[in-house]
Length: 362
Image 1 (cartoon, rainbow, N blue to C red):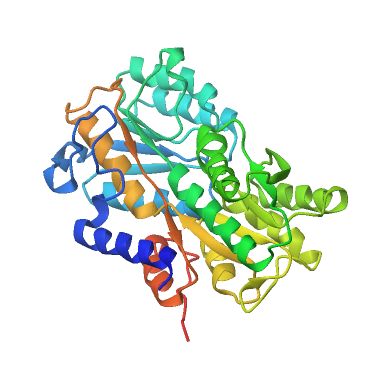
Image 2: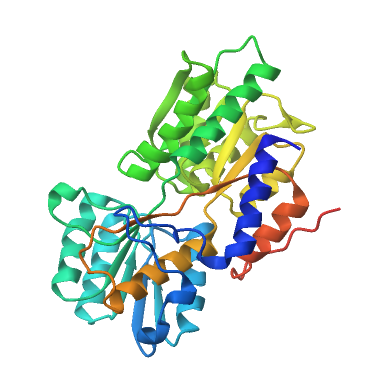
């Protein structure tokens, strides 16, 4: 059994033991033990109106939003999900509307942390409990809120090591040449996910070449166009990744149109691809022996939604101050191309999507 699969099996065993409170249910970064679902009094949610301002509406975003809605409504709350459209201004306007409506609680996943300063401050001044998901403003702004962090550095570092070790074993005469579709305005993209992956590759290839690393808006048509341009200007690369699903899937579409992103019995022909989010489209490629998608990271939307709800409940119960520097972590999980394991995980995590189709393993 590979070291990747051993890690996955170990994580799944822990998840089975501790249930949906696992991700984000460890001690907060201020040292305060976080409550588990069994410890929380969810009655405070009964009759309350909650909103989740999402980053966008890709597969992962929809799944975590749907899980948050299901979990909160099971406790008697009413939930509104808002598509942030990967646009800070759309999110700011949505926050303004929610605050004006005197909403009872908000989960906010900001596209651009700097743009979140004013709406977060406004929510706090209005006395509205708020949890930040994924990114937070610079504390120097004076705006601090309870926060669930996507701290994926260690996970993506290992993914970078895995990519580099594969290249070293299978193409020993090739130097590592990376293409990174980043979002440089987002800490969890630039500093955690993408830098973690690069550092992992460079731990094996210290002289790895970054052929391209810049912000590429994570919309498929935009990332597709960027990859088309890149294939014209700098086609000589052998590792590709992006910060999220639509960023990488658009790039893969362009590679496929150029006859790349292929593999022979899961041995990449031109480039090793690592994806992030673990959406059904990524998983389909991961399990395809003719695709060079070799590993996928998933954030487990069910567990993350539970973490947001639990932290918001603690604020509404008065256990956590609305402006407390409480920082919990929601690390991702690396998934290998093992159909039986993935089918079970995806059913649990993404079965809340109307578009979800279970994987049939032969």
